[in-house]
Length: 344
Image (cartoon, rainbow, N blue to C red; front, top):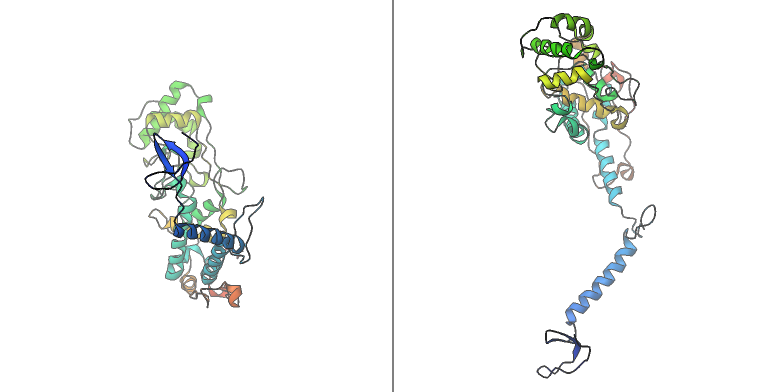
């Protein structure tokens, strides 16, 4: 490449002095329209930096003279939606969950909100369709097999406090011994076959029943139907949390299982806990109330929930619109089987 400038004879234009494979670069001026467009973008960039957030700093960014913030816009939208649903949320806090299905509007709101909560927080383990992941020990929420009960309040408690976690002293807790350190290998093989025979997956084996009575019946009951209050599963229904193959059952007996679910009460707030409990209960496996039946008067009262109204201005935050707080549903508007809990 040469650096000498010269006049190109065919065009009469000075070259830049650059050439590649004998092809020289002409020093033509840029088109006027391109230059003005370029200058305009510079001016536009300067104006944007002055008006809008632009330069990142250590803990934030320059705000701009307009103080514009997409996060503030999102927060305002959330505030408007929360205000529009304030009455329903307060009612969801106060209503007896067993009577929730008597209020069509409140139940529809709870299930719809619960579906969003589930998708954002629960589907990562239980799957988008809530069918669980057997290989990882994430239970199927669609069937009617529940370790600690499938009534809506049972589900809400599990969501609120979690299972075997160290963060909530009220978490549901159960622990199975690792029988690989207790029983001989041949005894475990007999137990595996006996446990599978309880669900009709194998033939009974001599000595299996006695081994089961001596080591397993205290939690799983003599007939293997389990004990919900202990979180001990039913071994007779062929529904397995970690799988019912010989290898899976043997692994469970040898080393036990210790699945952990985090507590969601503090993170979600009571409104969302109740909403997701209503959603999960309605997926198909939820059980109806069997204890402390709600009276007809209480069920009728639970259906008396005022309709929520959207804020007067959809373009302003409630504070900007000067709107008064939405009057919450009072305790007299419906049964309060649980003490009122603060909203999020």
